[in-house]
Length: 404
Image (cartoon, rainbow, N blue to C red):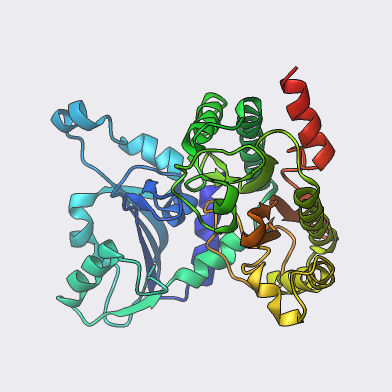
């Protein structure tokens, strides 16, 4: 990745007499684990916790500087080697390297009362940006600073993916496919949901995943009608379906895939009927997705498609009842986060979005979601997860051959 080019794009968007400070705390909310800050990594390629990236733009200079840990050989015996000066400069492609202990002494060389100071601030009250809050208090103790939320600067860049980024997500999907094959190879009644999940875990790690896109959903029977079921503790019952929503992460880029399988290897007629409605809805969205549309446009098209089918099944009489059985959106942006840090506007070439129609019918114990990842091109899209089987015949044939 050309991190220098990304830094320069941000600097181009910044006005004169401004700085941008990015911090790398340890928590990645989407993945539910301790992990590097995606925006920090996007601009630096550095995963080391607590480092700081500084972008400076004023009349005297335009520069980028990475602050890293000072060498502490005793601490390294406990927690591992930290980045060295030359190594950090080579990875991050920055102009200069400093040490974290000197950051607050240095920062006042780059700011005055008129300086615009960009930092990343939460967009809702549920997120705690403690690094940024401490930074603002520290600066305001010395001068009355002009802080600006830099979210939109990063969102503008991260919305459009390069071919290199798309290839990383394609690789994440290839690894995810291996995990789903491991699930199919071991799927049977009597197992616990978490036991089936464990086959996915082992397979993706064995095949090079660097993490998970998010905690795996393995929802069988009635659990499949809950959108974000997470317990994964129930027993798989003969005759039920199991819905998986999962993804491997590869070099921080995420796959996001959903598949629904018959636990005993064979769909019932009713399950197959609902499954085909969802699958054909997914194919419709894949056919429609292109530049100029919004994810809301795609969702409206799916709802229009669903309504007559659910009326035919006798599930609804009025159009507005559709939300009883389909209550989420068909697409979200995807990238270094499963729900990526993006601007939700009209799609452009380079956007990567999910395509995940679903239907959830508690009275029939049927919940079905089928999800692939689409890379928007000049005139349509490319399915980055197209090799993962999803046709009824392919699923049943694979399960039947496995049992021979």
